[in-house]
Image (cartoon, rainbow, N blue to C red; front, top):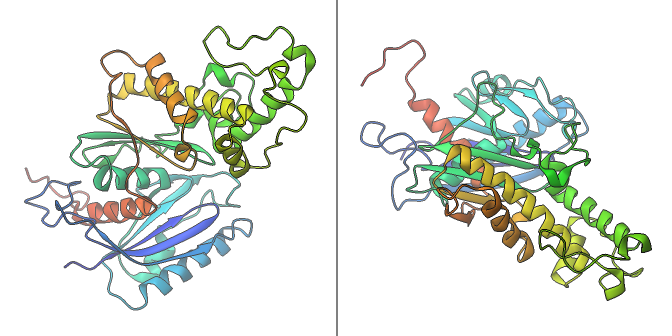
Length: 364
């Protein structure tokens, strides 16, 4: 058995590390890249997690990640280090080129250098959603499919198109920012990127909370309620104070968990917020299918766990925008689980180990 890969998933709230065995091809000649051995799922061992010191700057974040990686390794021989990180990643140099302030000072961080110096093995780095996409494509619903479109809806909205087991990274490492596509439903809504009208500002976890608060405020305004019927021109439910849909005692939705509980309890404002967000998300997925023609779509992230109106509305949104030829594309819940990004980071590290050195002749 080859030595395992030391894999890390470095995010805005937590850093996770593990030793991953069996995430790469058994035989680089007999088995094409991206196809793991059938019937032998990878082993993820010594999983450990620490909180990310997100506000303390890049040096503190790097030191926390290195310390966690060292404790997980605990003297074991490793073949490589595979890192999944938040931010736009230059995978060739292993450097973060752009990042939000959820990780203070993270833009410009060199990840390859410190880990190569500490562990003296090859280091591979890629964006966290790209790693998640590879993990899902090879070890989740993408198994035995030629391509997969992963859509992750949580604190933000990201995506990854995987072809033949390899993520499409783009020329600048920025491919897959599906949350930054414009949708009509988000007109006038600020996006965390600083633009207006993008999907993420409207339909991410925090975006849905803000949407529910706006719906509640509108429903509590008498001028808005008067003359509003039970359905709109698109057949959607319209909140109406006169029918008892919402009143002064309706919940205020402190956060996403609070909103999810309200929806589970049948609160009409929460249900409508999930429905509107799901429909907008589905429209974007339908448009992407028109362009990419992926073999399947995998839905991941905390919002995708919401039962009922969100998932139903996603499918309605896809049907609204997808051409007939792609409208029946399977849309499935992700299966690779909580370790998907670790699996993807380890698989990418194996791919890099098997890739011919730069400048060497190609062997057919």
